[in-house]
Length: 76
Image (tube, rainbow, N blue to C red; front, side, top):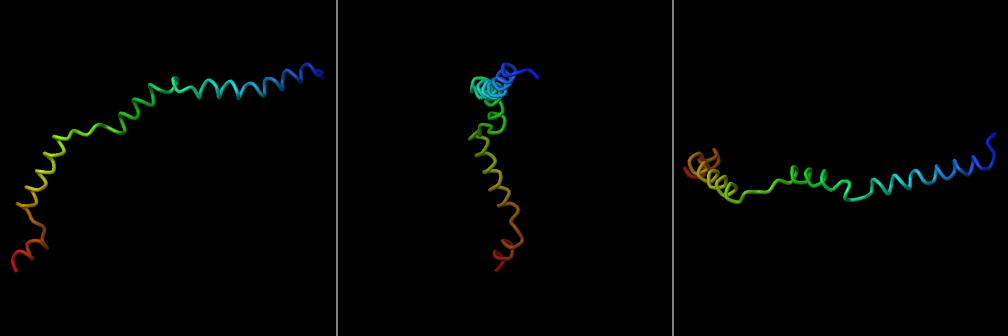
């Protein structure tokens, strides 16, 4: 067997490896660029003008093409 020196070295490696990995991969600067680009992709900025144009189109479409129940209510 290796003796107590080998066992002490192995124990130091077993303890230090997770601590070093935690320190390296828990650094916010390491993930900042990838997280920022992913966040921008997922949460795209909303264009207010485009939203207003879509809502206006929806209102005009509903006025031109009412739902069947609206037609029935209007005919009474």
